[in-house]
Image (cartoon, rainbow, N blue to C red; front, side):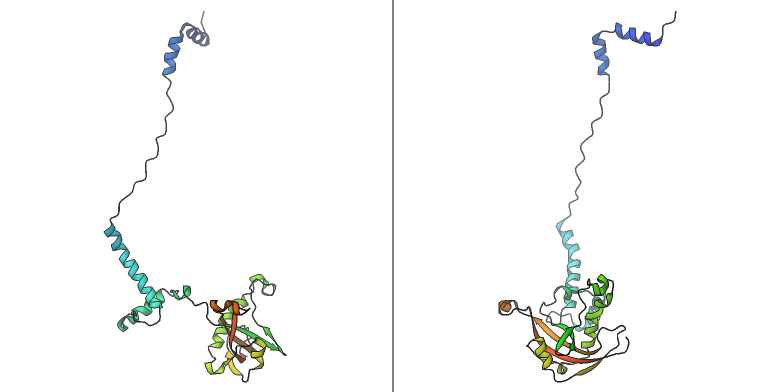
Length: 225
């Protein structure tokens, strides 16, 4: 009679004692334990090497800064002027962007409407009339006004520290200028008032943060509309 393999395994298990089973259980392999990650390796850099590498970086930074400053006792000699101009073209942003005086003169343009003035400023750019910023004409206003004022001389301006309307009423002359810009924002009679920021020391002596300094009336001729 043949005995099946299942019965043979069952009988074999019954014949083995508890000691033998314990010995066999010791033969089971334990799971491998992961070793801790190795610490990061650092490479010491000699201080002399670091100083040597930083010297050219510092010299270039100082050269760029000096090239953007007005003429002073530290200016580079005249024979290096060509290199300075090349450096300015290489780094056009310069340092002046971060050091602009907050008291720089600001200009606002108005159109006369009878006895009052109507502001021609189209900002903020997110207004409905600018289609929530999609119409970019408001972005070119400052550049266009700057180009127009470049054609105005100092003698064309009239000093005035009064209110906007009083400055407008005190105007005695008109200056004609051309505006060749395509899609111009400023045409016809334009009143421009120059203002300066009130110094911090006098902030409590006035309700406005800006004070009028001068005014000019322009007759702007536009070639393209």
